[in-house]
Image (tube, rainbow, N blue to C red):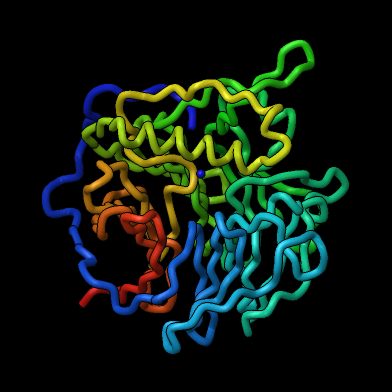
Length: 366
């Protein structure tokens, strides 16, 4: 659920030296919830061990209890108090709070430590006088400072880099925590008219994460490396990581076309007005899929999911605070990490029927 820049040809230089990294295979989950899901996107652990989940396709916020093997929906769809229109992710905040990222309602809903939905925070309240209409990839540090990319008409025209903004509670306005390459939304404006361009699929796209101390890590695909912004004007550029480009299969192209058709059908009465050109496919994949491909792991490590063939085991690269590759973690094919808890990794695994299963793995591995 992202994509621009040029396809990289050939193999990048400077691989990590032998012995510097360790490969760990997570072969079997510690526990699995029997209930299946449509499209899990995010998971955060509550203080009592239960797990808050976002099912994007189902437009649901749910709480899974591994001890009881149960799943309970909280809140409901809508725009009123305690309601969410399109829950797209979760942000951990201080005080055992979890914020639901609801971009269509332009707000966050707050989940309290006992797993109940409480107050809301609107996007427009975060930016002071000017406000913020929309944001991408919100994240927070241990102090509760919120980081995001703002989306506006001006940002859609940016071609080189866009600011990652930071909101600090109690302050008016926003400051800049770092920069990233702008996202190509497949939209262009000519003569005052906006139209959709052909979507460019499987092309390199940057992503970023924030560590608990507020350091921002920018992960670039070309070259593949991590750039750290420390918040005080200092930038640390990690070594370039070598990778072998992975070919895009015809099966993957068909899946993209199917997803686009489903999205148009989901538009209901508006679908007649939507004209989406045939997508353009890159011949090979970048080192990691797109925005959102990185998560902040235990010990302030960065975990980046790698591009692989559909039937291959899923793989994550682990980077330290200097951008050095320190290890890899592999999972079952079609699996992705949703979040981390105390001594646990929460994973979504997709089966042959495209249903998702919630799994828990113990971490660290002994």
